[in-house]
Image (cartoon, rainbow, N blue to C red; front, side, top):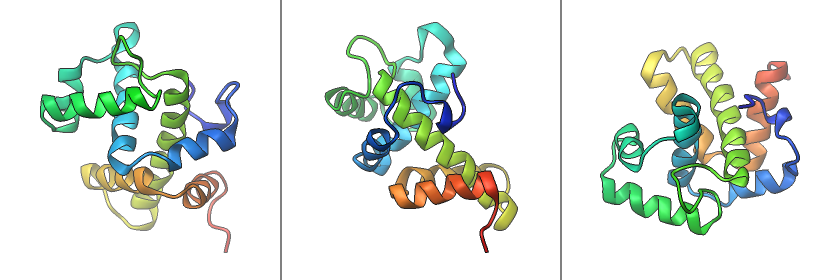
Amino acid sequence: MAEDITQIAGADQEAVERSCADVTTGEARYLMALLDMQREAGENGPSQASLARHLNVSAPTALEMLRRLRAMGLVQDEKVRLTPVGTSAALVLSTRRRAALAIMQDVLGLEGEDAEHEAAWLAASASPVLGRHLISWRAHGPTN
């Protein structure tokens, strides 16, 4: 699976960014977790129970969020897998997370799980404008 926003095949970048802006912070966390877990699990994908464990939430909480993501067209109806639109949104969010992680480590000096946790929250809650600046900063460094 592509690791960079520039490799989102066939996806209209503006539509993908709009879909990222339309999700809540919690929904974004689930999208990024599903992307990570799909990469690890391969063809079968994660289970609802493993997703709940990964995010440290109850099974009913994970089920409710999956229902919401399915209604939004971001998760497949029959499996715990991202749709193409969900994958595109998750790739954008994941790219933001990697950029935020670099800031957490290189600029703010956070390490380990603290840096990863804060980067995930920043990526999930970033506006499209901040998301573009995070990605640009990672690609080109500070502009001032």
